[in-house]
Length: 254
Length: 247
Image (cartoon, rainbow over the protein chains, first blue to last red):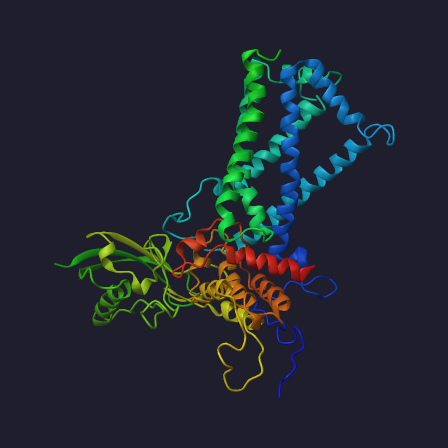
């Protein structure tokens, strides 16, 4: 005689610990995918992947500045006219911008939510300085590095996209904003840029392979190549992003 | 020729007490003693002096039961790799060393007394789905359900988790991901675990969250201190199972 077991019947919810009610939504269901820590991590991984793809294209676009003002400005114009004539001007770019803003917003939402959860999970700190046993520097920069990157992005948009804080002003070409924005007299802007780009590199050094892990795509022998690829992409992006302001500083781009 | 040590130990009378670090001198400690035996020496003296002995969890003292565990100089189970506190020997410390001893620190692991914490949160995670529902009866033949060697090995590796809680203690986020992932992986790689695979992943992850553990940020601190060396890819397995079940 065999007993029949209804799928999932035995894995009922267990009572929450005393004094801590399980998190439920308004409908009374448990928090669901986006309420769970694993679900939030998945959101972070997917939105992070979108932003990495953006960074790669952004870096490649920046390097156009080495081919002169015409090439760089033409590329900027291409971003606005792409999709024409089927779609009106700037439709494709606007859609991409909406996707990017949503990705940044969700990435930050999951990060803040998980950081708050982590803080609540350890109310009493250790007296002895906790020694990192796993090693790795990048992983410890994720939270404050993310804040630096977010602040930089706000400045960067005001500077290079809207021209609000750029000496070239609002009615200027992207190339003018680039050259005047990284003028040696504005060295502090370049310093901020360099710090932020290095933070992006560290962020991706951990974040890239971490995204695969979070989505359950890593395992066993794939860790070494994944971490290697993460390091390689981080280095390429940092170098690619840093060459342009350095070239402006030394006068190679003018 | 024994060792002389200075211990800074967390003393807390009960769950409501605020607790504090207290310094003790322990003399003539044999390098062949285990860490717990060294604490036994301290406790014998404290009892003779009429003091309250330092409370700590321990049972088998063979590294397989998962009862012992304390944060030694900021590292769960001490700096010796793949070693429980009971299997950590005093020869790994220097003479006249100052050793800081603290309980696991996590909101879901409230301190009961001194170095003893309440780990029943782990029990509730297991209750939520860390089992297989099988028709009871006499044990089936060992070869009646074929299991691939690689799967059997990986499942066994995950099953060696002793539930000591060092992963939570070491994690900067106070996450129980390695523990929960080990239990999920152990069952999801075996044929017997398949009928409840989806509901298990969901129920155990939800219970883990409900207990107030933090989320995983893939720091790898858990694996590094795990006395059984549970690998990080169990967490990838848990994520895979959970996301698939949540579709």
